[in-house]
Amino acid sequence: MKKRMRISRPALIAVAAVAATLGLLLLMASIADVRTRAAPLDDQGAGSDPRIETCTVTADFPISDTHPGDGVTKTVYFNNKSSGVLTATFGVSGTPTLVFVAPAAFDAPMDVQMSSLAQVSFVVMYAVAATHTTQLDVAYTAVNTDSVETVIEIDYVQDITAPEVTVTAPSATSATSFTVSWEASDPALGSGVVTLYTVAYSEDDGAWEPWLSSTALTESTFLSATINSTYAFSVTVYDHVGNRGEGAAVTRVGQHHVYLPLVMRGWVWWYQFDIYEPNDSLSEAYGPLTSTQVYTAYIWDTTDAGDYYHFTPSTTDQVQVALTNIPVGADYDLYIYDSVQGAWLVWSDKPGNQNESVTFTPVAGRKYYVLISPYGGTSNNSQPYHLVVTYN
Image (cartoon, rainbow, N blue to C red):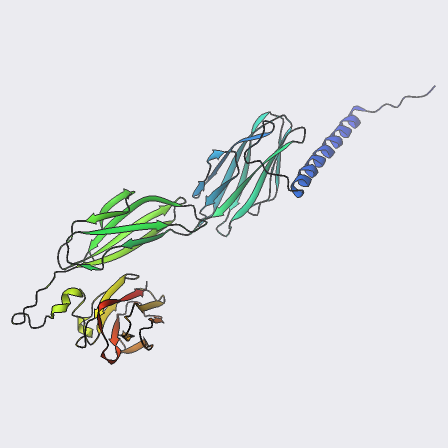
């Protein structure tokens, strides 16, 4: 008589466990093989089984989700100037057992999760450091018990760049009301501008006063100007991940003057067309110039020996001074004077009407003078030159 082999219950349990482990390994290998073959991605949890129904991304630093809550391929912008935790929660449905695979991202390894439920939330967490950058094509895969899969991709795009804001206002006017306009743009890979602007103004270097708050306007008429005052305008805007952009412009409000030779011996009739005159010497230099503001003025005739301006940087960041739009037939040179050394520091004296520019490293808190000097007495009273000083 043949003897029947008896297998103990613990042995049977061990065999079942090995079989389950091998099955999981084969399933993961199948998923990896599908990715290697670059299977087409579903734009949403396509089909009904399995389906990535929702995808909610949160973080303890600013983010912006292009399709908040939707289980679709999308972009999530993040501002990680400070580190934190980003959490992605996926609502998945399908025939269990369900497997969810989150690929490596933000230095975190691949994460494989399983559930015996037909509807379940899978949570993926990333520790995002300030040194992390954009993570593209992060593909999340849901697989049902029949090895049918659904994939969505998330592009995690870093945005730590502020929007650029341009403010336009007349550099000089005799009117007590005038138009100020502004616009903002974000870099090509930015999260986009929240088009609500905050506009403030300052009179004669005084305290900032609110003008417009959280406005969608891109221009308005300033009605509060007074003669012989200078007004600075500041426009602030944010992008969708909290980066703050700011732009500024300055307007000098002055009177049109009447030439009265017997009463006003120091006044020249054409000063009415050049609001910065008289500025023909160091003691008469116009300023302080506002960084990045475009100043337009004339070398009017042979009696206009040159125009002086001044500015005072508050840091040692490099200074750039540019003289452009010099009229044809004129030859204007550019000089920088150091008020402490009492000497010309740098200059640019190209021939003809070529653009002139200089760059130098200043001493913080020191006053510097700019001289626009006409070479050979050249002048032009129909086309103004443009002067821009950029400093911090």
